[in-house]
Length: 252
View (cartoon, rainbow, N blue to C red):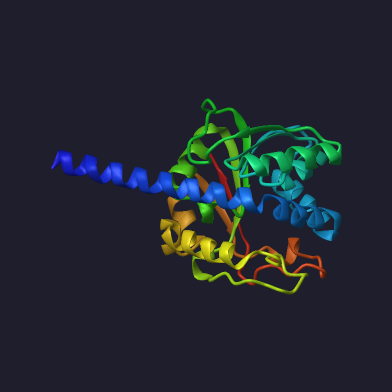
């Protein structure tokens, strides 16, 4: 029985490691196009909308120490820097981090960046005031482990802010409309994205109900907003996903 359990654990580990590699490669290839998308968003009315929403949720004039998990092209790092916060951004894609560093520097802000797996953080316990993430949890092989890690590095009383959609319900398709946020993605990458999504355990959960239940099981106080799209997706020149964009604020 013990040997069987070890073999099963090793299989899950190997499967997750393979998925992590596929996900990293996928986002490396998409990094340039993704960066252009985020810069377009920053240049339009979405930037002010997101900045106002984040300021409302953080609700402080103090400079907070914030971990931006899955920083991507540095979208949140720039907005949080403009609010006077100290940001550390992590991503498992080296090419994405390259984009983030360039974008933050060009915007006139400073942030610290590290290549790191969101599910295995190289930080001590209780070091961040806030952990923030956008459209990341749906891509993770083990979202439960990620949530445990994010809670671990939060200071007592610290907050987790997570914004995501229930992409397990969605089948991605190639878009030709240049206003669409998924325009110009090669069909091979669209197929790969769907294949990866369908392999992820989180795709079988309905969200954000699952997230709320799991975070409460970790002893966190949780507030959910089912759809904040109308508050932050305010650029008529950009066509976003039709799925609701939920907001999770969880306190340690």
